[in-house]
Length: 163
Image (cartoon, rainbow, N blue to C red):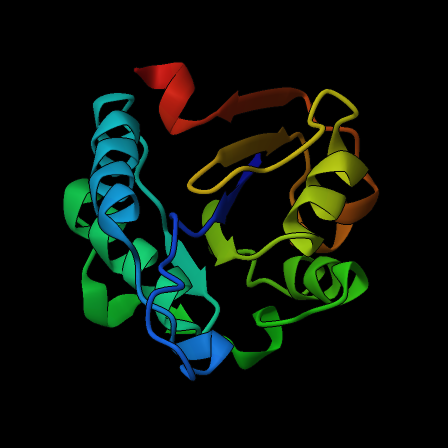
């Protein structure tokens, strides 16, 4: 069994003019939502074996905040340049190349590609709002089989849904 979490970064700030897109920080709502989602996942007993993040400040900060809430070492977060501004096919390739030693993997990234990948796995997901978590359980032994497998479990949560 392999479990994939696709997590869109928390709400980011547009306040600082001239700031490069990848350098945008979280805004106040993002700073509230990320720990809330991390605490929610921790309460559900979620323990990732691997966290992958886009190098964009808003995605990496979201990953770091959620890692803290779940007891995952921040230094163990793997920053993957390919996740930033990626084509959905690139994200699926990253997933298929994951080390099979990892059973539970979280990928922190961006829209629209995360929504496209989430829709690839489940037509129940129309949009990945900020800080949304899409969980997919696959009855496969190898990550290379996950992109073409139908998930046996789909859970979709947002900060608004969890209250």
